[in-house]
Length: 268
Image (cartoon, rainbow, N blue to C red; front, side, top):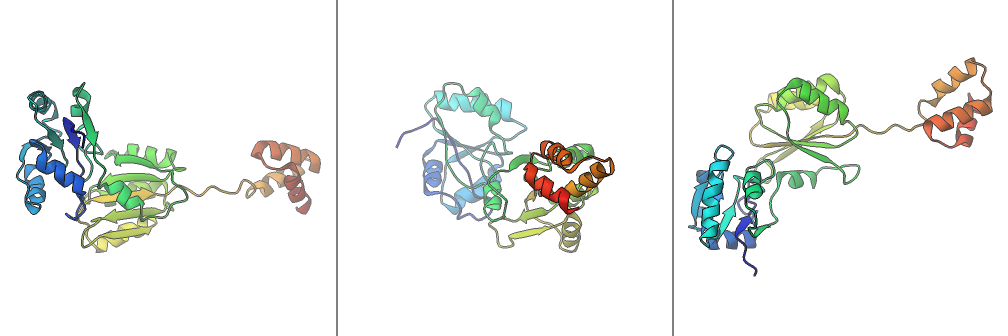
């Protein structure tokens, strides 16, 4: 198997069994593991009897740790980068390191991700979605996202102590939005809840939130382009436009078949 200088290694998002054999082999054989919280990573390593040395690498010391990790690599040591849970660089530290390690052989292992775990058990209209990372904390930023991107399935991370506040903001601008919330994924109390913002708020008011949150705001359903034509037809008729004229005008405006519009004009 080809050797690399730096391995990006996903770790379980909850259930410790959700780790690949290759990931375990890498964590055993590298010289150093760079991790967000040594205490968290140590639990995983102890579970699999791995004794590799760990150093801290988190968002508050990323820049200063880059030179240390580069020194390890220059001295011939192999390094693995992990986050507390899931895949590094996906809303977790690592981007600064990757940007700085020019000419270093890097590979990423496949593995656990809260986003894909969540999406694989939630129904959607198609494969398209927008993953936005953590939802902003500023109210008007949340409102802008929810209002301007309503034609997309929007997926976010959120902390349990902020979810209800976020849902309140969503409710204020899209009260009938369809929300799906996943919490404690892969764990004993895993739960997927769906409904309108107010329904989700009421549920979690009665059932206090714990654990990490992934949630989706489903896109607004596209309306049939002919569904609001009747009103336009009546308006043009009242202006004394002829049926053929109405058919031409509305077919151009709505991009629908002229004969279909003409039949609708005749029926009104």
